[in-house]
Length: 236
Image (cartoon, rainbow, N blue to C red):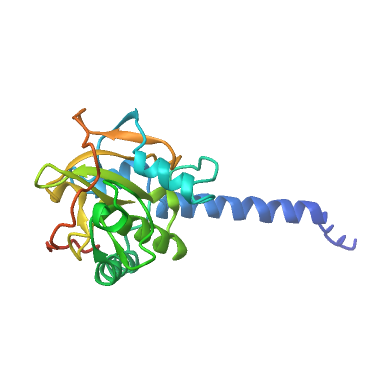
């Protein structure tokens, strides 16, 4: 009796099996290389992330900036995204921070515009703290950094005066880009009192940072001298 030839399996069965195997492989790889939020926090040093509180008032300077720059503040809320703090990302942050600090002349808003506080892009090569931060944010977004990780932030500086910086939220912690230095530094090593910043999900919502404290009346009244402090490098 002759052996009957094996029946070929229907094409849809072969494709379904291949898809099943591909999905199984994907989830296996994902479970290995994609860390959970808890694992990211465990890898970050203690205090790497600021304590975020409830929504709070929007700085007048930001609201006025959005009014004058039509379209700059548009956009629907987005899911939160952090930057992977790789050596390439660290290099880009330091490069942008250093370049802007070197090419913008520090002047107060009163000297520049004749007003106490005005947020603007330093298109004429002059500006104060918030103008530096706005330009760094814009340049980093052009390099592919997610808007949700680049947060305009209001602090009180070492003289207890209002100051603006750019907070960059990464999977290794939060780092600041500051016109007072040419280095990126963890937020909790600046010596600043953090007041509020943009929400990760909506750039037009601002959230409280840490315990409630009186806010500065203005972000910056003067153009302070530039200082430097040490950096933190990512692991390769």
